[in-house]
Picture (cartoon, each protein chain N blue to C red):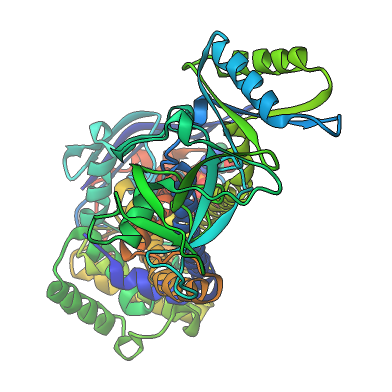
Amino acid sequence: MLELRPILSALWRHKISALLIALQLGLTLAIVSNALVVIDERTERISRPTGVAVEDINTFGYLAIPKDYDKFEAFRLDLDMIRALPGVASATISNHVPLSGSGSSSGFYTEPNMEVGATAANFYTVDEHFIEALGMNLVAGRGFSPEEIMQVGATSSERPTVAVVTQRLADEMFPQGNALGNAIFRGGDDHPIEIVGIVERNLGPWPNSPIAGRGVFYPAIMDQWFTYIVRAEPGQRDAVLKLVEEKLAERDPNRVINSDTLEEQKDQYYAGDNTMVKVLTAVVILLTFIVALGVVGLTVFWITQRQKQIGVRRALGATRTAISRYFLLENLIIATTGILLGFAAAQIFNGFLVSEFNQPALPLTVTLACALALLGVSLAAALLPALRAANISPATATRSV
Amino acid sequence: MLKMHNIRKSYRTDTIETHALRDFSLEVNEGEFVSVTGPSGSGKTTFLNIAGLLETPTGGQYLLDGEDVSSLNDNQRSRLRNEKIGFIFQGFNLIPDLNLFDNIDVPLRYRGFNAKERKKRIEKVLEQVGLSARARHLPAQLSGGQQQRVAIARALAGEPRFLLADEPTGNLDSLMARQVMELLEFINEWGTTIVMVTHDPDLARRAHRNIQVVDGQVSDLQRTAAPTAVEIA
Ligand SMILES: Nc1ncnc2c1ncn2[C@@H]1O[C@H](COP(=O)(O)OP(=O)(O)OP(=O)(O)O)[C@@H](O)[C@H]1O
Ligand SMILES: [Mg+2]
């Protein structure tokens, strides 16, 4: 039989300590539920599809020492050599590496000579191997042929006539779905660039920026900006990294080579998000632990304080179950109060985070799930002391002073 | 009503074993008012605790209302305490956080009575002990004598057959002690069997029968006397 009313009136006489624990639970709920949506958003951000074969790709750049170095010739020799190496699936040369945090962007229009209302997008210069080398998925049209690849020197003013774009850019610039075969223009320009192919996805060099996912690939090689992008056969990445490094140095020792895995570059790009996830996860665990400790502490304290009373209740006919139930019910009342307060606080706190810090909105279901979990934690924390309270002997009523 | 035969109770601590009761035999009849006296540490509280099912004896036989209680489990013992036995303690043992009404309500809730029945009983016993007007007061707002009367009301509310009191007047001045004693006598006249431990020889004499406990045993003098003989005060 429930004894809510007497528990409530007894609690009322200890309202300060009860309220403190309730507030602690409420605050934990408010913080934990908000932390969880941020964790969830960041985790999702980190793990969303990039459109490229992150696990298999290495990138290589170099600094040539001699002044009159023929870079275009070096590119050809390097790439021919790399493509022939064991474990190499494909290789291309590009001005920038996706997910690396360094890239180029530009505004594009569907009409010539426009100045405002551009669609901003990342752009890459690549050779004809780029789709395979990046591990992308061509969903419409074609890639580039070797004859289309232009060599763009520092003073060159030649402009590409064709491009491959990402599905997202195609959809946004041509909502009717007629991107393929249509032309795009760079700002203030009347030079048409025909879209000849569409790849499924490429997040671009800045996955957290608003232009992430909008990409334009030109058939070109630039001697100013270049990186070799080498995709290894599955599982061969690390071996290929070493091998290519060695062979590049061997072919031309007069240069400083820098190399990296794409995975490492992606991790670096997401380092802030990863830290945020780790810190918030620690906060969630710590707060939950502290609140559980608080509940254990208060329950143990109250049981110790009420030893005599427990003995008296036992003498008056309370079963062990009735004693444990009393303390669990008491805990439930406190926890429910705190969680109701916390529920409101969570929404208010979230409103603040959304408006001031551009954080994701907190869905009611998440708060509800957290509330239930916290209720469970609170009950679990009270369970052991409550069970031990039932072992207090009824003789305590006559024995202790 | 109560029949103990060769009850033994020993407490074992790390170093010593205390024989609180040894071959303790006693019979108390329905409707009797028995006082229990004896030196400190002689085993009076131990006897009362065993009689009231607060503790289990180490050996011997105990029949309560003809029922051998040694084989009962904890829940059954709790229920028997709740239904048949009323307790009055030296320190009153009211629950400080609950008002008088809720204090008396405690055993009634364990009994499983509905709210209406409980209210009726609480009001009745509060009336009997003359504290109806104080139902919403907290124990701390009452004098010792009043608190003990509430404790008696709490013990009576379940209409127990058997009332056990461990020095119920021990913490009271003589005027209040006399009032409590009169209340107990009144209750006894209405048919409740009472066993009362007391240090006060005057109060002990007012019972039907006085049991002297010495060294964990009923003293020889009384053992020879016929335990069934009810001496009307
Ligand atoms: N839990 C216990 N553990 C160990 N010894 C105990 C325990 N309870 C009681 N005793 C011992 O048992 C003996 C009888 O104790 P009991 O409380 O029954 O005496 P009493 O007659 O009620 O004394 P008083 O008049 O002082 O209340 C004492 O020697 C006491 O120290
Ligand atoms: Mg005693």
